[in-house]
Length: 462
Image (tube, rainbow, N blue to C red; front, side, top):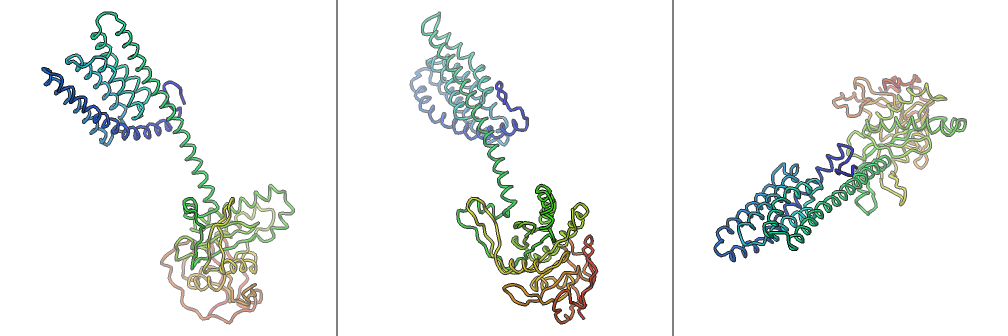
């Protein structure tokens, strides 16, 4: 910030300060002028009554003063007044000074009172209406000549009274400008502090939004109550890097972190594209959910994300120090979501859908997307699956599960979430459950084309 004249070196910062300071000056200036009108009305009335033969002149001058104040007040409601508020304030002070000086010359009002009243008005405006340093300097310079002339004419010759009044008048003028300088410098420093605080708040909010959904973060900032919600229908996805533990043991720590950051950073971008919320990473496992935001196609979003994650893994395979394959599990159903922790916040999910999705990933296979029966039922008319396969799931016993093969025939490419109007697939009859994926006589072993998201037909149903 430049010391004299006061200004910021950054033009954008200077414009922002002037706009904010001028807006505040409008409301304060209006209040100050109205207060001056209320306080001066009794004195003007008293002067008119005691002016004797000059009552008409005093009445005209009082009416002119009131009109000036009224115009100043009305001006504060002008649409663009904030841009010119400093000019309005300077004009009011200068017109008042010249008017008071003329009134003192034509009537019996004390010239000393007329001279000092203009300086006191400027002092009041400096303290209340945010008159800036340059404006105070200009107003003082323009209001000074008539006041000095009145003082000199009221005290012919060089007298003690004249010198004393000139010294006091000069001291008050310097005081006005000095106070304006100090207050503006203080407001500018406060403005910088508020901007720095706002920037830090935005940075903190961005960091918070990386671990907590945006709407939950807003509630956390405003509500002292625990954040806990129930969602009746969401889809949870778990993805795990196959064989990462022995790979991590053979690499330097920095290289391990770099590889995970590269892969999971792309997964974060994919979550944003497909409208899903990243919940957390656990080692080399990645967890995300669809349906926390209101959505009717949460299962399709999760599958689309899973296919996109496989394509990213295929793209990064050439730069990975070992074969890069993902094992992905997906399940749909109700969950409980909430924020836990005191010093370190974490947004997490609990419920059968979470546990089942984790089991789907654990019982899955490299490069495959393993889904529960709930997810399969939501997507059976859009995707082809192999199965059902009977899978022993901890805590649930033997349950039917499915492996995604790809978008079904005549449904178009459903890689992108939100594709509407896809023709429904003809209803098919299901074959009896297969005991294990590896023993499925119907499943074809050709790998998915990860770049197109399409795969072969398996377990032909009918």
